[in-house]
Amino acid sequence: MSKITLIGTDLAKAGMEFTFVGPLSGKCDECSLRNVCFNLEKGRHYRILNVRENINPCFIYNKNKVSTIEVEEATSTFNVQYSRRIMEGSSIELKSMECDYLTCPNIETCNLIHIKEPRKIVIKKILGRIECPKGYDMRKIES
Image 1 (cartoon, helix red, strand yellow):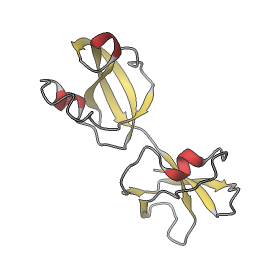
Image 2 (cartoon, rainbow, N blue to C red):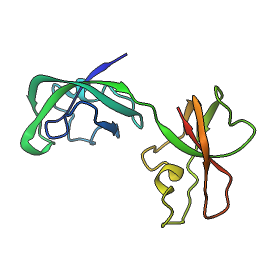
Image 3 (cartoon, helix red, strand yellow):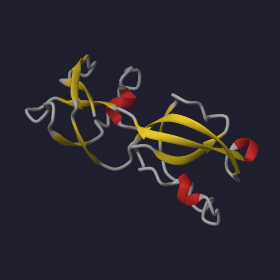
Image 4 (spheres, one colour):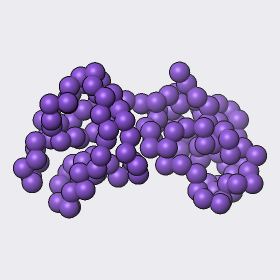
């Protein structure tokens, strides 16, 4: 099911994906459009389906304009440490690995940098094993 929200006009392109990080504290409190802007779930990944013609003013975005867009929740991939509970259809709580191996190409997906608090997900598919330079048994999953 799609949702209507707003995004900066320079980012409003069908097919683009983004992670909703939430409102800027204090900056949007007085705006009459804030409920449309923030009707997405913090930390969730979305794909833009359609860009509507409506352009609205905004104090935050460059060019001071936001476009009205239709979005749907996009499939997200995460790296998780393998355990017996990691199977398709199971529900798990995502937790950051808090890895300090800064040159690892998987550091963002293992450390869940876009997700600030633990979140429950359902594993749709196990995409495969991830090579971990620290030796952890990691799997890439889709939710």
